[in-house]
Length: 232
Image 1 (spheres, rainbow, N blue to C red):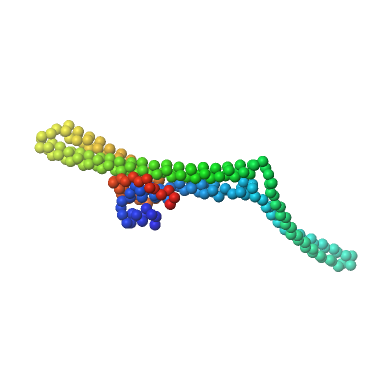
Image 2 (image 1 turned 45 degrees about the horizontal axis):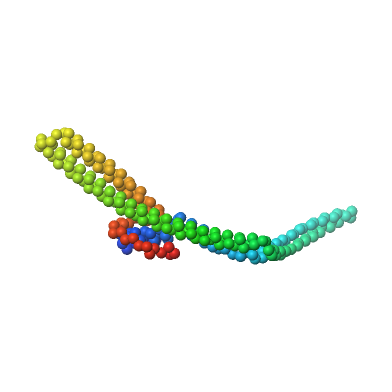
């Protein structure tokens, strides 16, 4: 069970801080950047810079089978098979005594590349955090818009109901009913648009969090903290 699914089992509210930590753990872009940083760090060795001897080991094995058949005038036949095999190995050690400080420059470049990848990893994390915060707030905003649109539809439906009753009593005209119907259709369309935008913003948040689980209810009491843990 994922951490998001576990939280859903315990509580139906996802806080902003939880969403950020989920993204730091599961976001694909962050994982790629961290792996690249780890590989770059592993490349920072004296051997890769050419400061250590290199060893080449070669081994080979040869085998052959020779068969000779001789037939004499006496009618006798001689059949002989000869087998031969050979095993060889060689070891070569290479070491550059001095290459004009090139080995030291290469080591510095390896270190600089590792530092650059670490910086890129950190930047990826910070960008993702900013995107999660923005998208989280967007979901809340779209939820509010959808709720407002839902209330407008309910009010328009109630208005149409009252107009139809008054029309039956002869107190209103067909034009009043038509206007009420137009308002209801307009509000219903706005509700559909708001719901689509809400679903899209929820999908975007799930993508940033690296989660395929259904998104729980978001916490509307936003608390921004600067104590985020980028290392875990």
